Length: 359
Ligand SMILES: CSC[C@@H](O)[C@@H](O)C(=O)COP(=O)(O)O
Image (cartoon, rainbow, N blue to C red; front, side, top):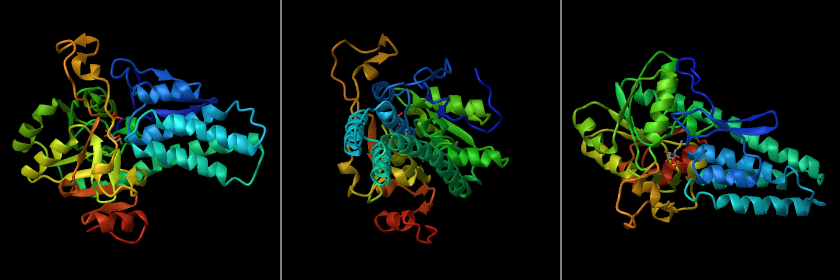
């Protein structure tokens, strides 16, 4: 097992020796295994099975997936190459429907090729790889900026509650919800984190607890149904989560259970913060009602690992995400600044970089 320098989280996705390397998140916390998808099909499978997961990381993985799809292309023309790229992008969009970063990254790579001033297929392949690498590197800088921007909201607090994993494992590095925690730690302020285990796939227990523990940040694991008790005892002073898609009105899709936490936070007069990059906003959607919510296999609920914990054949409802209405969201922390209500007006203002502090 790798031991990290205190407070410096690892990066779960990188390009090394001509291959994409991913930490297989289904194997954590027991084993730190690196996988190297070699085809677009293997990358699709890694995304579908949550070997790589978390909205920004899914986008980065998909961009590399496009390169894997065209790396050995024998296209005879630019048009043929672009058609192969489009086919691969369409295929990758079928892996997971909710995180808009996936669609954003694929569009970005396609646009880079469309804008390229060359018809040379070898040069176009190189552009696909360069764009994937740029998306990865920019995400790391973006997450660091989210950490910087979010830190003032949390620096006076003792502890926060988070849900699922919106940490370094969900991004190129640093995470979104956990970015301010890492940022503060690197400056000597250790904020405590209560991590929901996050049923059914336990990203909180397996991933958030693991990565914070590795980085030397104090983390306390709770089951999802303990959040109300933690809040009522005053053990946390804020909730901070990531997002998979944010609609134009500020409604937030995130891991199932997030909505309940937001309602609980309101009842306990705690701020409810969402941390997300600009690539997680989908301003084409008026509200969260339009966000496609992934439903996953019933076995994730009826089984604990391979062990059945429910009667065989029982009906199951297993949405992977829920939508938190904007009225519960105190602020959205982005790399461009902090966005506060009214979201309809303030989201475009902040994302377009108009000088506005969100106060
Ligand atoms: C920075 S990641 C934000 C979200 O993607 C995260 O909170 C989440 O819901 C991840 O769900 P997952 O199903 O593990 O991909």
